[in-house]
Image 1: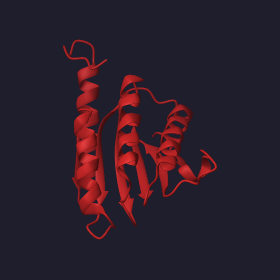
Image 2: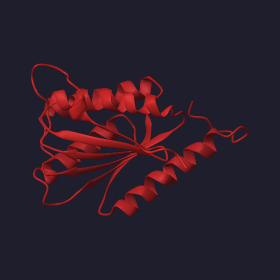
Image 3: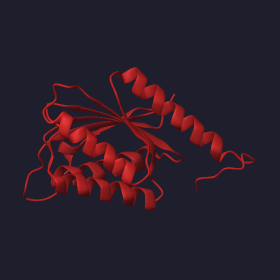
Image 4: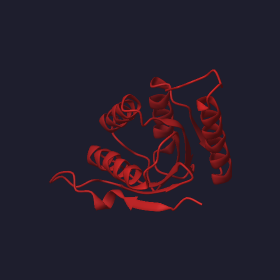
Length: 164
């Protein structure tokens, strides 16, 4: 069984302007689990990228990764924050660390959920990465695990398919 590693954006200092929001991350079975507490600003996104990079390097992971993101408290973020988030995802793809997909869990009572979830889903769609919203952790995990298994099968020699 793979060791579970954890980190938080609170551990990263980006600038003199403090991050708004927090994301606690753990990696388990090639899935990045993120518990995000908003509202969010640009500094938080930069801290998130650095935290994920550090955690993935520390885990020594290779191969496909999936994500399960649970947003609590508030999902609010400015349009600039969504744009920075999309740019960060594009850079991960270009750097060979893209995700097979992302599953979001955002309860209806989370502030800004009805506004931000469509914007988040659209950001993923623009870069061609599968992303869906789920009501249960089990459904989210099952979907991401299915994507990971499909990607691993596609990478096997002789499969005739490669996303390399």
